[in-house]
Amino acid sequence: MNLVERVKNILLEPKNEWAAIEREQTDPKTLYTTYVAILALIPAAASLVSLALFMPIGLGIVLAAAVTQYVLSLVMVFVVAFIADALVSGFGGRKDLSQALKLTAYAMTAAWVAGVFVIVPFLGWLLSLLGSLYSLYLFFLGVPVLMKVPEEKAVGYTVLVVVAAVVVGVVIGMINASIMGFGTSGTMMGGMRTF
Image (tube, rainbow, N blue to C red):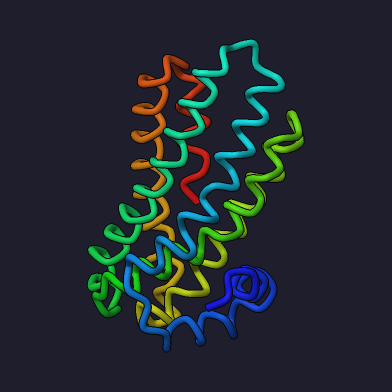
């Protein structure tokens, strides 16, 4: 799997790419080291630059916030995959944690790539949010292919997984905020990139 090709294909030709992904036998370690760990750096690095340029706080705090955001992003991918796998049986799908992990990781592509825009004050967060919304759409498209959920149940399944992921994202954001001492404003930053 070529990283650049995968990113381009999942963003521009998602239906075809989900079919290709479904056939691949990718173990979690390879998925994390060759894809998730690399793309999750984009919003973390962009946040680092944005905070360093526009926030009157120390560089140590900024660096700690970016590292924490990165680590929590890696954890969040697995947590959402675990939730997706746990809920799939109720929607007539097939339990398969490896497929759920691929679904979650590749669906996050748009959010991670759009995360670069947080460098731009104010407008950047809006563009990042649009990337997250496109990630939701990518997840929805991948559900019938990877998790074998019938198409008529894909919307309900996607909504339930997203709601659960948002709750987990808010909790993770609160943890991040309390660790970093940002208060409730950090909750928003930590919870926004659930998808």
